[in-house]
Image 1 (cartoon, rainbow, N blue to C red):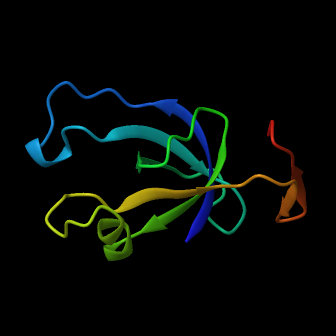
Image 2 (tube, helix red, strand yellow):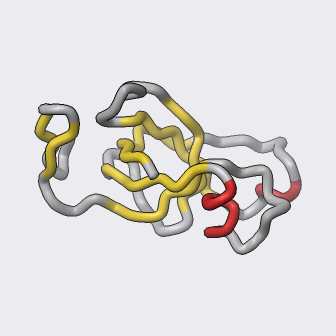
Amino acid sequence: MITAKLIDNVWATRKAEALNGYKLMLAEEIGGSRSGARMVVVDIIGAGIGDRVIVSTGSSARKMLNNDQVPVDAVVVGIIDEDCTFDSVAYDNKG
């Protein structure tokens, strides 16, 4: 799992049928060697822009959707509530 901050919504009017009904968002990794890297994630828990989240990746992400056939490899599985530090940089709930 990785930590990330949700920075925007992703709108795709044309996409694989298996993705219909899923909320897509743009996330930026915080902490670790890939800090700042961006990825598209599926939000299944109702997180919003600005939230710091926990993202599950790979086959574990698809298991969160209960469907191994969905072309998804990153899913928001938690919202980070408390202040915490990632790579000596403190983040609060605002960011």
